[in-house]
Length: 338
Image: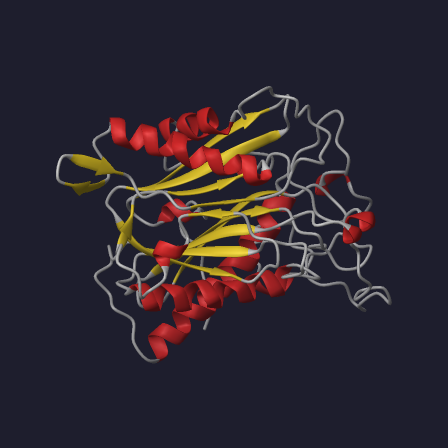
């Protein structure tokens, strides 16, 4: 089926979603938060071998909490999980959360990428800055937000170029909208061999990441493994692509988990290699139910296919939109030789 993007080509094409980004240029890191106007059904699927997460167990279909109030993607490795505490504080101030008697508890699952080895100054003292970054990101949440060198993708790297924060959206023929938000920081590469062509090219819409298509013929080195910092293979260092796939369809927690699983196919279409022992690859899935449409049968298959395609596009868009800065360890895609 033909796909078309939403008007913004961002995850916020789904009504009721806002995204906030914040960066620390000295540390070379950042945080991104997705906040729905109303609590939403959510799930998660982890396929990487080195995940860093908070509050993911409660997202399993057999567990009690049905809805969440925000999702966080952050740099900082395990330190970055503190960002969820800042988001929690901002939501509590707004009177938002899961109420138990007089107590208000915002449910804020989070996942992190490893960006500590990107050249930034990481000697921040006793406490990491991520709680404050999370609070600032939540306070900045809007329907419009930057991609590329922004938020959780600010200090991200791929094997061959700067990573970044990516987003894309798809509107299906039945009116359901799917959106992806992703911090692209894999151990592998998003481009084919030594070229500028994106692995995600077959899914591109309206030249959204350069319009180059796939190289023809494919280069002899297309399937060679390009691995970021190969010496890291000897140590338990995370890289990681973490993402959110969202829809305005009506889904149960179990169906949301199936959507998260399907969205991982977008990783496989856009990154080579992916889901390695040194990647903490993770996809959160979120369903607002705002369309009132409950997909079944073929419609659910179409939704899962759109989730994978939208995720692949978002990954490529995050790298395509990255901008160069002084001190970069790797070049931005825009500066690569043609």
